[in-house]
Image (cartoon, rainbow, N blue to C red; front, top):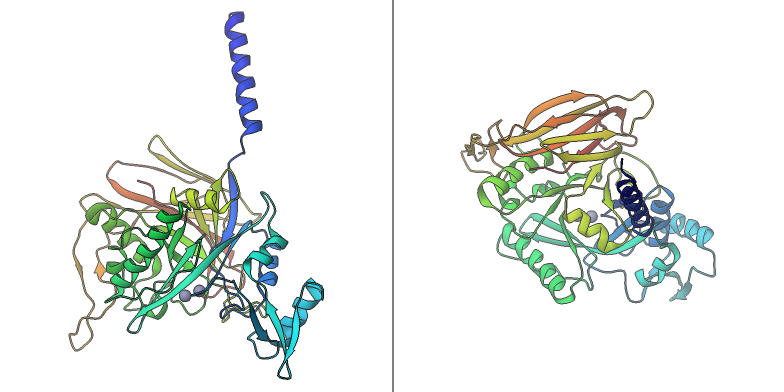
Length: 418
Ligand SMILES: [Zn+2]
Ligand SMILES: [Zn+2]
């Protein structure tokens, strides 16, 4: 190599090194985007919950109580709130009498619920842990629950209502979109547990515009993720909406989240909505709400109930995944997608009387078919060129701890690639 070329190469190396030192390295951040506290129907104090997540390997947490922000002055009775004396005693022992505020009112002992702006200061530390202000807008149409999580809002939003489920969805999405445009602040909209109360069908969800996320996994035991004989599973719903949104309607992809929807913090039990069941791993340079949301919106994340991924690459027509191995554990990866020219036929499901049920239609096996199933720690898929999208589901041989569903194994879901 001529000397001037060598010097130029060395110079370039130095420039690259300097840039790496100055710029933050892109890395994975772990977070839960759906959590309840005593401010609504969770049974613990927000500080106890934030502390649990910070001490259990999470980097960000969205505390998303029903229809409110944790703000303003709120006193609750110690013995009759849903956490009761047990939660209070633990709270007092952990944070001490200087932090915990109590008073007597009409002969009853009360405790002050601390607002978000106060308790966040105890936990947040640069590139270690952040709290994201959130709200679960808890709306409905007739008997159908329509719940949406809004993260990083500037101020809370009231349920917007509407004439049908799609209208309720669209009006709530519009309220956040408006606030985002007015403030210039990145905000995240995600549809919660579509199968809770069998509230939302794939045909409704595929039509919502401006909505990019839904919960393919929610750790609450009452949300029916696996579906049943007449209701599609959340994973089946995902494939249907991806296919229709990408190939037919043009409403863009929907990304799949795993969340806890935790309410119960004192007793670990498959029948309780406990923390630690489902989370997202987001690839970004900085740990800020803005940085998390922008990476999530770019699809630069995966959802997990236990499987950890080192990398996900989509280059030169190949989707390749590196799994972080655990001793004695095996992994199977299914690459799932729909191809051009798929069978578009679908039919509503009817009751015995012939009446059409308000549930997701039945679709052909072409929709969300398993294109390839491989074992090992470095699965890869070569695109043929006719795929509308391909996503990967990695299932391990390790049973999920404190699982809601019988025979549940640890899983990770990548986002769809086009
Ligand atoms: Zn909900
Ligand atoms: Zn919830």
